[in-house]
Length: 207
Image (cartoon, rainbow, N blue to C red; front, side):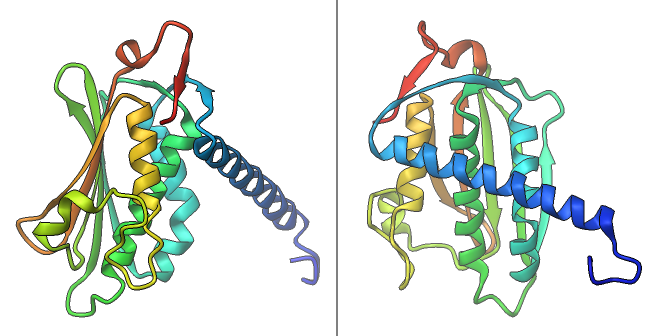
């Protein structure tokens, strides 16, 4: 942009600001993951899960394009806010997105469709689900998908879904996977709404 004639100063400035913002976000993710492995407490805040999801989608847009994924969203308009660690919940969403992209990377005979949905889950919880059109998984391994170091991928480390489970459980929620009626699988988590998930001292401990 600076080599253009005349130089695109405004575009270069916006690119630099975006790089700084994404670098700071990456730093936050690394710091929170270090805390997760050290089992430290973190201070919760009130979060709009839809907004947090949109930020993740924006951050992942380039990766989604390169993977030729057709992304659809269905974010509930009346979704209650939740009480939790924003960066760690976004890390769960990122992990589920990447898991879905990995499940579809060999698909060539149909569109690589991915649906992210948020909705109320009963009266006290909210749910986020990521549905893909990939290869799915064998029913007998469904209960092991969230175990540490278990992976159905040849090059997988088996920690992404395990980390996600730890984060969701620290938010007093549940995470699970199910096979679709058609191709692919759906990974989802459910956590309490803000008024139910907060603890008396405003802190939660990752186990």
